[in-house]
Length: 367
Image (cartoon, rainbow, N blue to C red):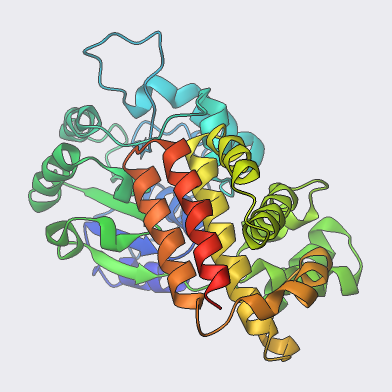
């Protein structure tokens, strides 16, 4: 993929707005930053000239012509009229990039910002700040590069302002968007960028990297690489003892057992536990619910090559999988997706998850 970007640059066909699309953990952010640094080491008037050695500013990602935009939250210390912008969290962003590299999750970013129960967005204040920054002349006489992480989290006011900026970009400015949900972007923005789909990493690539970089056994690396589903981030999470997924598995098992036994009072308590999580974590549980439900359904076919579960998940599925079948799989999927939508729209989490639990009773009985 990087070769394609380099070829476009060398041939003078580099678009002013690029959108790297793909699921979480496949290297989009790493590719965007790497390519941004490459552009800032070039002379835009002579793209075919040899690449200069990377400067200390680029190695430290503190080049004056490299601008990062990312979702932010509003802290209690901010004024009522203040619209949070990336500059408010520039120190935290840089520290996370330097310590974790480009492979980090939204949850890690929320922790770095000091937010738990909020949803991070890109505000209209951010587009105003970008206009001011990019209107200035390049400090190094070359490109100005704007890397936008998760543009789908822009509110509508910000998206409309960014659209105008993309339609009439400042001279020698390149926008590189890193997107996981392009369908949530304005169609007018999608039509004005060069979309490049970054595919999932091959299991063999992840397996080899785990052996070389993490020094684990070949058998363990092979199992983790299958579970990772093409995501290096997921592979790293599987290496961590006591991962979030283990907690989600416990919650999934509790939900299904309580729903099957129709223990409404206990399900209310279950919904209160989920409601105590931050909204980002609530949505991750629902995504885990979707994955685990899919795996249980596929387990019924007794084809190991299409089932991706940990040993603990498989132990549970061995007895439970028969309750997820053609009669309820689509309804279970719809139920979880509606809950994800409702949580994303700031609905009352206790109501959403208690209703979710009650509907699960109905769907399990209807099998």
